[in-house]
Amino acid sequence: MGYQWPLDPAILFEERSAQMTGGGLDATDVAAVRSATVDMWRDGDGGWVREWSRLAERYVASGRLDLAALAYGWAKFPSLADDAKRTALHRQADVYAQMVATDPKIEFERRVLDVPFAGTTTPVPVHLLGAPGLAADVPVILASGGVDTWKIDLHGTWAALAHMTGARVLAFDIPGTGETLVPLSPGSVEVVDGLVSAARGLGDGRVFHFGISMGGYFAAATGLKGTVDGAVVCGGPVEAAFAPDKESHAGMADIIGNAAGFDRSPAPAELAQRLRGMSLRPLLDQDTNAPMLVINGADDIHVPQDDTVVFTGRHDTQVTLIPETGHCAASKFEEMAGNVIAWLNARIAENKGAVA
Image (tube, rainbow, N blue to C red; front, top):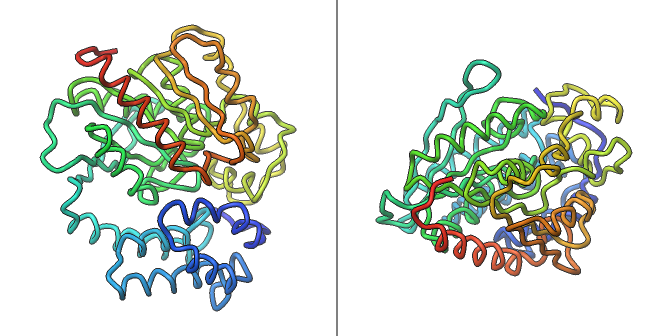
């Protein structure tokens, strides 16, 4: 069910404002919500959910369903720790459904895929996006967001990815988030392996994976195992971020604690034990990776720089650190996205007809 924990909203605004405006929200509107919000969990005036929901309601009234979906997404952020945040998610889903049903610029389909997990199967709702009139025989790009930023929150990014690559994008929530019910754990990579297999039958057989933040962890796993035709890891933790003595910032330990299935704030040792085995060191020690782009901001407070530069020198691997920006290069999003699109388009062009 999730849990609340002591968290100052001012810290989140300080750390996430670039992501809020980079996603499309007006800086003036974000500043107004920031000024009005005094408590993270209060279900009333001055509470995080209430103030973000008010902004969403204004966007709905003005016909900007895209911005309303973003604002409701921030209302439910960073985890579904109480009924107010779950209500915000339901409202976001309703607005989002209206938006995609009336958007002529993107073909949208929602499916539920049953994928193998722990000796049985688990349902994973996914969103399939493509440019209007997209042919069936195109590659598929798996798209995974973070532990607190889900597929519905990143719709604009995924739609742009579909248009700029000519691929079909399969967006999903990583384990422990959104609609994927399996908690975050070392074994939850199996869920993503199942999505890779399913994606092989949804296009021309080629599958790429673009993962952001914790979604980048799963892209690193599929890329290092060579189960995809190419992988982009943006701000993904792979090894150093899982060290037991790694300092947590801006509530991240409890955001991950919620995703990992705790119903209360865990002690650092408890969280480390639950996530023991998350390190991708065993895969890093192998030499089987698909072509990979590993990219991040040089000043990331969540994922140590070591988790990016550790890929330096691997075959078929490009490593890029963007200076003067932080986690996932949020404040330089266009530069990061330009690198990603150029790399993906080159890989798609060079292995046309190949299947991993």
